[in-house]
Length: 403
Ligand SMILES: *Cc1c(COP(=O)(O)O)cnc(C)c1O
Image (cartoon, rainbow, N blue to C red; front, top):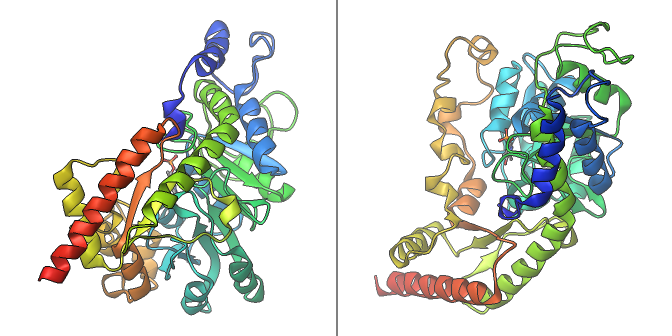
């Protein structure tokens, strides 16, 4: 959570600008706001980093994904291929729009693979919601070949991959639209916040209208304009946007420090037998928010987790059993537990969610242990951490051999 590590005077200054006027709303009130436009500034800072043509700040990353899917033309009955390893918001956004999630295989990039996408395509497939997991990037050349060949809509959930890129193009900008999250746990935080990005003007306008009750924002009196489409309220407040401005300015420096730390950690850990690392579509484009260890198999990974718990090593995620990010923990999705009927319950799920056959995903996530990289770590702290991890990995492997 590098952003939260660096919360300080810059964030306070941006918030105080807003407090000094009391204009917490991103539109109107020109005479009273002392020219403070924090949502607009937040969008401009994100554009500086990603070079997106259009950015729209919204209330959170989940809302940004919904806006991206909706603006891309995904709705009721459309099958959308998505990964079984992601933050649940990806799947929720698809379901809330009445679309039907189809789970496909990931690979060692921790993202959907081109092959996985290909195998999940049916005559009803409308799009793919690709997720760039754990700060990295997917194999975009291979994936775009499948997307283009089958004429699918690509939406990117880059909730965890703001400032990550692939061959110079930033995550979120390969398809129709993309989404970043600025919740409390990301490379930068707005407290709660999200950014929708696209390079397409029409898609931007649709997302902009969709995220504010359909208001078209033409002219300078929001509220008195036209409402070309039905929308909802996904607006961000000026207070959250203010934090987002200060935090986003820190991201290039955070990323460089995290890359240094990740290189240091990997160099030390790669000497230990049994430790390898997740792959990246493009090594140069990592946002380096996570150190992702791959152990030889699930049994050993589970023993390593046990050893690390015994040794009191914290700061890691074992997604396979512990976290809300993996399909094995999604009984509410498998059983379609809802407050009231969603479209999927009327249309029928596109797959038997209780009997999914995703062996590659089970194998990769079973082997995966991720550490959040801190940008404030000292070399001593990193040496202590890698020494402790290596010792736990060695113990786990010795205990397997002894069996
Ligand atoms: C954090 C995250 C989200 C959700 O973002 P919020 O801002 O918490 O709504 C969506 N997708 C992924 C991959 C995430 O990591």
